[in-house]
Length: 354
Image 1: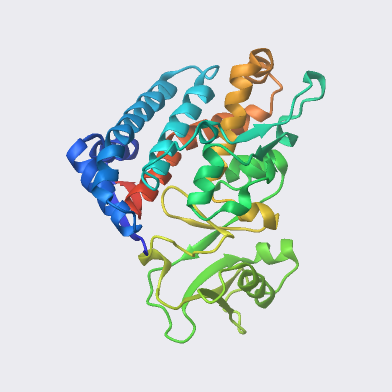
Image 2 (image 1 turned 135 degrees about the horizontal axis):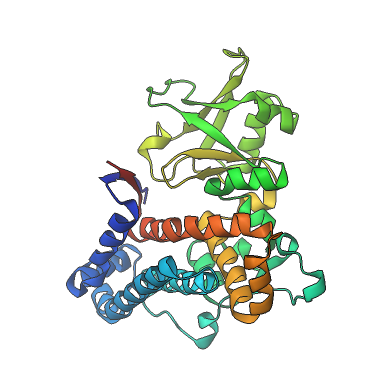
């Protein structure tokens, strides 16, 4: 089922976002909501499944709200742990909306990810990796979303930071490299033959040592076969930017469709802006919902099990890691619940200041 886009003007995007979650704290509404989901998925007796799952989902949402509220006002020393449990509880609500029998066993109640054992004298935060295990909440969600290929994979924290659009300015300043390039999309009607035009800066081609044609071919090779295609323009209209074309069999414009570019190399910020990821190909296939999960798990483990090390990172005057960590904790507080809300309501919901 293709998702739509809903833009909601408001004075306080975060408060409005949580107000929408209130719909999932009312039992009659939740039963109806779940029954429709389970019926569409072909589940037997969806009304019984909805009756059974309604209360657990309500309490997951209520608890997540309290964790996030506590994280917002807590000190940095405890914030990652509170944010992680808020994120994990929202994830359970999302899993339950697809599987009324969650948790089916104790194995799926684990975190589902792990970090390497650390030796304090050799610990390098940006080099440390997070690995996906075979059992637990993370792999359970990955299976339900058709992302089984993520199971068993690992990523460094630096790779994970490089995938979040809102983190790109800090990432570029710290590592002196750019991994996400802004994509300019206009509301002009698409060309019937070429498709929807979008623009990128020439510096992207310089860094990749590609022509527009080479980039389009790379995007076509990595995209969904038969769904999305990219075309290039032979004649350049500007010396500072170049134009490519996005083509889809059913959709004419990315701004009219909840899936956006529907391609693993394209990312979106919380305002609906698009970015092109140009670095490690394996990392590009990690959806942002899972990026936040992995980063918050790692930070929560530091916070919970390594208080002396975590304290040194927070209060050490030379701790460069905290530049990105503090910003990430602000970003995920607002963005992860929004990503879950999009999944639950099956549409892209943008909260924009009026």
